[in-house]
Length: 150
Image (cartoon, rainbow, N blue to C red; front, side, top):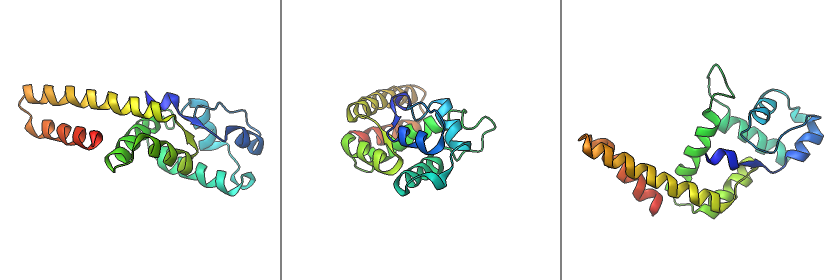
């Protein structure tokens, strides 16, 4: 999944400011738990604080009992990448947006690969929906494919 490749670029600065030892994978359980409970925001510089707060708002806002280890943060990242692509951003622009907004470092090639895999998955959904005569689902898949490929 795409979330496994996402790194938090300023993790070393965050470690120095928080006194915590953190993995650099932004969606690892240890990182998510530390960010959701153990960071002292007053010790962070303005940019890092804003990125971390945006990260928490965007990815850790679910109400699941097992949060943040429930899978919602990873699914939200995957959906956000699709949404940004459907808004017209290319893989390089998506990478830049994630870095600027959330401090998430993802290679554009990984994003492109994820988008291609998503299209293949949507094509399979479309085919199965057509076989089961679920026209609305098939049309929704076709619409998403068109927006991603545009």
